[in-house]
Image (tube, rainbow, N blue to C red):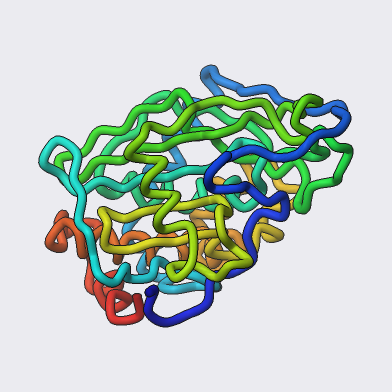
Length: 278
């Protein structure tokens, strides 16, 4: 069972972990665009190059959740490296918030390509309003990640386009049998409360740590453009930096446990000091 701390609020639309779908209804208009181009590339470059000193100044910030140990651990790797597995959906506002932190944390260990911007959902296929609607974020759907230290495998289960046949959202990427086995086992009691069973975002850190739900308040991103969020991350006293980078520091602490505290540029003394709180 997960040690210490409570899993925080997760996506309001229940995602059943076996069927990975939602129920029927009518669609509503939605901005489902993914944006790429020079401006997006510049933002991605800024997002993935936050100075280590800024992370260290933020510390744990206002993070309200962090990866919890899996007991007993069941370490898994990909290509001989510890594998971090993410499952989420483009419609999900909590996934939208978590991606900002995941991208900044993972960029300390490797390099992303193919990141493009998107928004969380506003109204699902049943006409239900989403919390934190239209949160500006990124999608992992067409991205790639390379690292000497670890592997990252993202699965975006759904788009942010309402699906009238299910009342939820259009399917995007299908998990493999192994990925389905992970979410079926660990996104359920006793690893998470029954009220959070099957919820996203779901993140497995090499079979040693687990997180479900957003790690900070997605409300700090509301009404902000991608450029405003990215700029806020470089100001350690801003609410955005305290939320996003505080969560990223806990993620980094867990990843450093997997990599033997390498590289030193990521696994700073400030980050390692958070490992005892995982």
